[in-house]
Length: 326
Image (cartoon, rainbow, N blue to C red):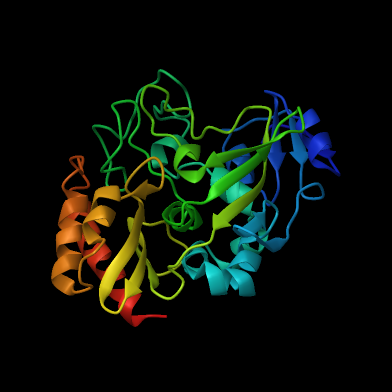
């Protein structure tokens, strides 16, 4: 690991004042420290934001506000979250391990980087790590790679479980820059697809820090589910995950939400499938047809074609679980 300076801050303004191209914010450090150990990220300065950012979860007129320093375990077990956005709690508890959830912050979770093996091995080509070096996974080992939204420059997937649930609930990311002004980035616009700039993960301004995530009021708290398919039962990233929510009147679907992890460079919303579900009866046949609509747009690679039927099955199970698991 490259030697670095450690700078503690006590406020948002102090934190953003210390941010530059040679520094990185650190909260729980559950991802950044790994990247530093592997010489993928080599900042000169770590700016500690733990004292300057809020860790509270509060009720607002429009929903819930989760402070950027709220630990994942605290969010998952919070009474307000369980009551109003239980999908987030379920997604968090499906990820990582208790020890990591106790350290990882909400803001840091949004910023974690891909676990693609080509990104993590500095001896291999990776446009995300070294622009212009090529995508090693594109024509090689791509079993865990993207099946939608990828480009010839990058086929990596976003690793977060929590972000999939937040995507499904149309969350908003609250950020503050050096001008001390607060700005809102819709969650759907926060994470990027690779396109020609695989090195860019998100749209967070370079001189800004995440201060909170807002979860709008929703009507999916009674019927929701998170399904995660992985190589082992714990401490493994998703091959496929699905966050599902249904707003029901009797057995009729008024509104639906479907989002997936393990399929793209960002949490992926299945908007066409959601539109199809609205107004339909909540039965297995309809769920299967919605899943078929979702997988129609996928473009699997040579090594991950198995993900397509796996995704279809996971969507069907998640929608069915919305009716049976509380």
